[in-house]
Structures are given as structure tokens and as C-alpha cells.
View 1 (cartoon, rainbow, N blue to C red):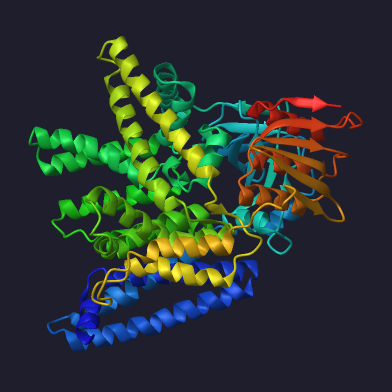
View 2 (view 1 turned 30 degrees about the horizontal axis):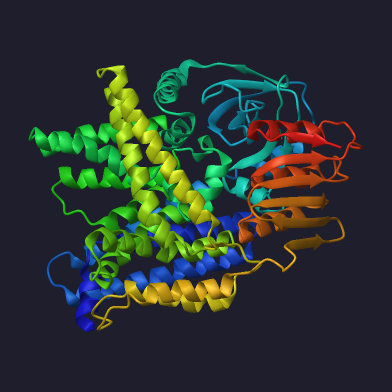
Length: 631
């Protein structure tokens, strides 16, 4: 036991773990102090203080276990000075995001006729464009950041100037309520504004012209070569934005537990890196030249995407790995992962609270920590089964608690669905890269037949996702029961090292899945009706074969969220939504339901009152191709 502890203390990857922990707790402390959240303030202070004490003890212990000159200085630098410096930089970065937002919130009460701002970032969402805008309203004082929600057909990119009249809705630090407003404040964003056609004007800037042209050429080529659905998938993978994929496919992939494969991440970056490396190896090109060229390809891929955090994480890890090649240093993945996480958090500390950051680093850390042990537990299986099962189990080991805590959802079918769907999507992505590259030099009829093969593969993948999504494997219970800890513990048993256990715990995987299913499965009532009745709402959900009717009055956002939860928990499809008695006061709840549920028809009472509140609802329905029935 002492020998194992000694080896742990002497590992080079150990200091990087101190760095990420110091950065982690310093960010929590800084946000807690600035937002007045005492639980975060105490947690951050305790974490930094405890980490500092542990770091000093580690330096002392390593001094006793090692010998040589400058050991204390080197260990102090690695375990105390560098981690504290990174933590201090991260805390300063958090403070820089809170530049006088309260003062501007008061000044904003005086309305201006026309407002102007510079677009810092524009991202396509499912039902519109989300643009981060820096308002240019003050010369000698703080220019606040706001989010402008624009129609999806808007052509806008970073560097453009936008002019609008509508007054943004600002929120200050002391008065912000709800996770949405607080989440924006963590990013240094002080308000939001929703603009329709005719309410804004854009002055185009050529700073992003080249990137936009490249993306448009790629998009047009994908539309020309592949079918509509396949092209949508590939756009999501090429541009790092799954909003290109239709809502029904997203729903099926989510319930099948394989939504992560639709997000551009390390798996897709590995494909981009692998293909040129194969070519370079075939021609015996110098590895330093190969690493340099491949790094440029990775930078190009990141440049054309919307830079999701999963892809940034993978690119950062690749960059650190390439640097280790150039300086002739042994590559330690856990060390590289910690450096990548620390780097991202120092520049964008709000990512710590983002689900995407937690999932991508949680899954990668799980693989690095548990994959080898897990693979040994399933060594009795053929390699084509043991390797993907070990990858899935090790990745899900840390993802399960994150999803349960953040979303209140548990998926137990992903262990099986990942074996089939993930490799097929990887093959589709790889083939598409080759086809797009050869499109300029290979005859059209060959490209057409190759693209048809990819289309068939994606049709097969969608069919598999639909089958898995219809099985009772995805759950959204009203609350996460503490009893789920026991099947989760069983799930982790195959990940334990062989030195701890003397025999394989592979049997624990099916046992944990069966146990979790017994705890989570909630059958439909015998009459196939679910009634949700509150002070504001009266909704009946009727399930008949594979069709669902949601009918009644939806009067509050909490009730709309409960309907969405029921739909997810029972995996209800082909939904006909029949809304009664809604107006501008309840339109937001109805809109939330329409956005978060895949409906096939929308029926409303003929006694509705015309108003602007219907505008957004009709836009969303038109976007999804949902017919509207009025009676």
C-alpha cells in the first residue's frame, strides 16, 4: 500500500491535478463572492484552503521520498506556486466579467432611440440566431454585453455592426433570479433582446468573410452530394452544431443514449487526425512534419466550426500532445487533460457551470481513469465487443451522475446502443470526408454511388436509433432516488483495478442495469391516460398505440416542464397537441412545450385573440413543418 502511495506521489501527472483543483475552487469562490452565493463562497474557500494544505503536505512527503538537489524548490513550484498562480488568474478573469453591470443597468433605464453594437459571436440555434453583442453606447465607460435573438434567416457573423430600437431587458447582479439570468451573468452578459424582421439593421464586416465563404461552400457541397437528412447530420458534425439535425432525430438519439456522437468532439477530431497520419505513414514522412501538418488541419477544423467545448477540449489535448512530441517528452493523457481543462477555465471560467464542459471532461476523465481496468473485466469477450463495452462503461462512469444531477435523467440502454450506432456514425463521418475531398477529381457518377452508400448507412443508423429510443431505457423521474446509488455502485465494479479485486465483476454490469430499470420504470396507467391538474393548468395526456394526444389548458411554465418530463419518461411519440384557452399570458408556456416536444400537429381553439404573442409560436411551428388546425 505504501509503495502504491509512493508511486502516486512521484507521478508527473500528479501536479496537474492540483492545478485543475485550485482553478476549480478559485472560480467557485470568485463567483460565490460576486454573486452573493454563500454556499459557493464557502465551498470555494474550503477547497482552496484544503488544497493548499494538501499541497504543502505533498511537498513535504515527496521531499522525504526523494533525494537530490532542488527537490523542495521543484516540488513547491509544481504543487503550490504554479497551481496558485493559475487559480489567481482564473479568479481575476471572473472579476473582469463583472465590470459595473449594476451601474449600467441603472443607466439603461434612460431609453435611446437607436442602439448600436458590435457582434462578438453569432451561433445558429434551432429556432434562430443567438448573437453576443457589445453595445457601443458609452465612450468612457463600460460597454455591456447582451444576447440578441434574431430570426434564423439572418445573415450575421462576428465583427458585424447591428442597429436596433427595441430596449434590451437588463438584469443586475443583486436582482437576477433564476438559473438562466445567473448563467448569463457568469459569462459577463448583462441582458437580452429579441428582435424580429424589420426591427434591426446589420452593417456587414468583411472580417469573417473568408470563413463564411468556406462554410457555405462546404454546406453547398454536402447538399449537392448527399440526401437532405445525411447532409444535415454532416453539417452538424462538420460545423460542430447539432442544431442542423432535425428535432425527431435529436430526440431518438437522446432516448437511445447516443446523442454525444452528434456533437463534434474528440472522436471526430481523431478521424480528422487519423486520415492524414495514414497517408503520411504510407509515404514515410517525417513525424515532426506530419505532426505540424496535422496540427494545421486541426486548427482549420476548429476554425470552421462553432467551437463547441467538446471540440475545444479535444483540440487543446491534441495541441498539448503535439507539443510533447516536439520537445521529446513522454505523453501522459491525464496530465494533458488537466492542462486542457485548466486552460479553458482560465479563459472562460463560466464553462465550469456548463453541462457540455462537465460531460466532455467527465467522459474523457472516466476513459483515462477506468478504461484499462474495465477492459480487463471484459477480457473474456471478443475484442470487437470488449473494447467498445469498456469504452462505454468507463465514459459513462462519470457521466451518469452529471446527467442525473443536472438534467434529472438516467439512460441505461446506452451501453448497448453505443456498440452499434457510434461506430457507424464514425464510419459515415470518415467516408464523407473522403467523398468530399475526392469530389473535385473523381467522376460524378462514382461520387454519387459512394454518397448513396453513405445515405443508406445513415438510414440504417436512424432506424437503429428509433428502435432503441422506443425501448424503456431512458427515464426522467420526478426526483432522483438515493436508492439509485446501489445500482450505480454495481456499475462501477468492473472499473476497479485487478489488484483490488481477485475476480471479474463483469456480471455487475447487467445486474446494475436490471436493478436501475426496476427502480426507474414507471408504466402507463391502465387506461393510458395521464392527468396533470394544477391551479393554472388542466391537461390530459392520452396514449393510443404509438400516437399521443396532449389536450387541455397550459397556464404555467412549471406545468409545461412537467408535461415535457412525462413525455421523456414514457418516451411518447407522434404527439398531437390540442391547446385550449391560451393568450399572451400563457403563450410562453405553450411555446416552451412546442420547442421541447416533437409534435406532429397543433390544434387551437377558434376563440383565440390575435396578437404578437402568436407570431413566435407560428414561426416555430412553421420551422418544424407542423400543420395548424383551428376549430
